[in-house]
Amino acid sequence: MKFRPVAGDFYELFTDQARHLVRGSELLAEMMAEGSDRDGVAKRMREAEHEADETTHDIVRRVNSTFVTPFDREDIYSLASGLDDVMDMIDEVVDLVLLYEVATLPSELSTLVEVIQRCADVTFEAMPKLKSMTDLEEYWIEVNRLENAGDKSYRRTLARLFSGDYEALEVLKLKDIVTSLEGAIDAFEKVANTVEQIAVKES
Image (cartoon, rainbow, N blue to C red; front, side, top):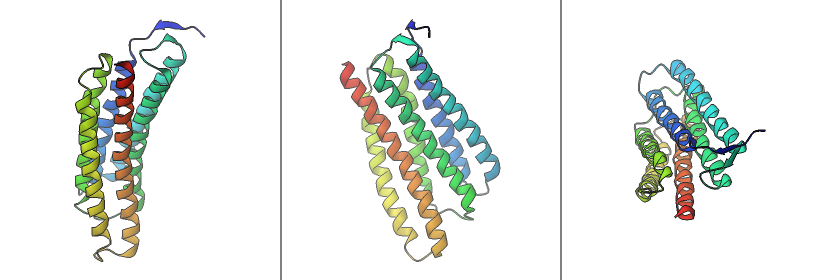
């Protein structure tokens, strides 16, 4: 194996990973919209998730063939894996909506989707800043705030599901979808925590 002395494009690859998350969150919002072409959206989501996987694999390959990395190898693996996990969670939600064939999704889900979209946007904005390790604190503070808002919305949505307004089978299906939405938000927070740990080490 040939080792490169330095690879300066890790930052670009992390930004690419975050760009995939923005795309995934857009497709998620489209999937949850009334009257959406769910089969078509799910197909595009699978394609987007495959492209995201390729970016993750590219990062791993470059770590393994680079002599000097921009920061600790384990941190690179952790960040790449965390970003990939977010995309997997978004893909899971889209897949569940398709497979469960829920006719009408509660309006409360839109708040969780909006949190996911905002998390994707701020993560995308933050990734290029890894190069200088500056102005990142606002990022993880904002993601933490969003995660707290998501938790509150998650609890309210569960309360609505168990209010008696839904059939038992619908409750089971919707609870899975809501839990996966919350899982995506939690995955974003793990990415933000990883970025914070990296920034502290490198400061």
